[in-house]
Amino acid sequence: METKKYKTNIKCRGCVDTVTPYLNQAAGEGKWQVDLNDPSRVLTVTGEAEKDAVLHALEKAGYKAEKIQE
Image 1 (cartoon, rainbow, N blue to C red):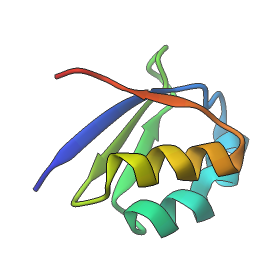
Image 2 (image 1 turned 90 degrees about the vertical axis):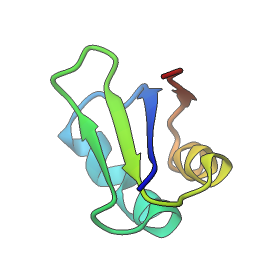
Image 3 (image 1 turned 180 degrees about the vertical axis):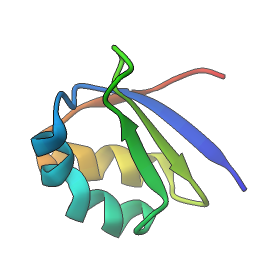
Image 4 (image 1 turned 135 degrees about the vertical axis):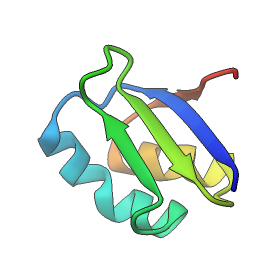
C-alpha cells in the first residue's frame, strides 16, 4: 500500500473538520490523517489516491500542501 506525506497549513481540529469531506472524497474515508502535533502539520494519505486529487481537494477546502520528499 502506497503512503504519501504532505506538509500542510492545517492548524487545528476545526481545520481538519473543514477538510474532512474533501479528503474523504479524494482519498477515501479512513485513508488519511493529519498530525496536529507535528509543526509541519503532516497529512499522511494511504492507498492509491492521486497526488493531484489530494492537493486539489485541499485547495477546494481553502488549504495548501506540498509533497514531502521521502
